[in-house]
Image 1 (cartoon, rainbow, N blue to C red):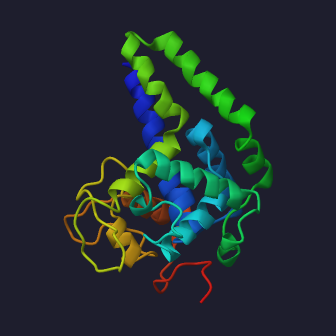
Image 2: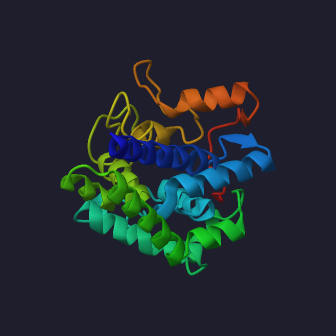
Image 3: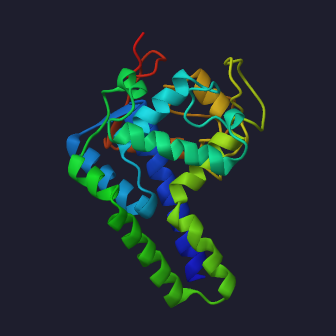
Length: 251
């Protein structure tokens, strides 16, 4: 039971910080928050993502490139230019490293308007941080695993963010239905996205990139949206009511 709880907690907490903080806040600025809350969510992103932590700046730039070049050869992670999900994410890893360390000329167009904490971002992207988190996961399993096959879950812990990214970008641009013609291959894969917290409404999101609720039809349920709505009501964040555009993309 401890392993199941730990796995589900890591899956959904890592997923939440990716969808809420890195995607909807850092990449799109769908809402605003104070610097104090920004630092709190920055810290939670590092703690909950652990060994697969991504810099919010790096994530934002990569994601803005994805919107601008969706399902073309310049898309950082289109399944239509890779033979499988692994090679797609390996390609994404290389582009992320180039973006993060200033080696990408492509990313310059998308700079600006994202949260930064250089010390934490630098530390979280070091090999010793990733290895340290990996050792923590292994030790937890050594202590609490009850059958051998539970150890097969460890590789998912090690690369949790990449697993989420693979599911969202592979499935969300290949399988499902379309509400809109976006001139790309984006799809809505689930009507209740319990698996990736609303991220599999890719077709809706590519049409309406500043819409904080990724569900559009009444029967499309985005589980992250009620959390965002609640945080807005209690004053932690403020949802922006702006025209539908992608921040950081030059005309």
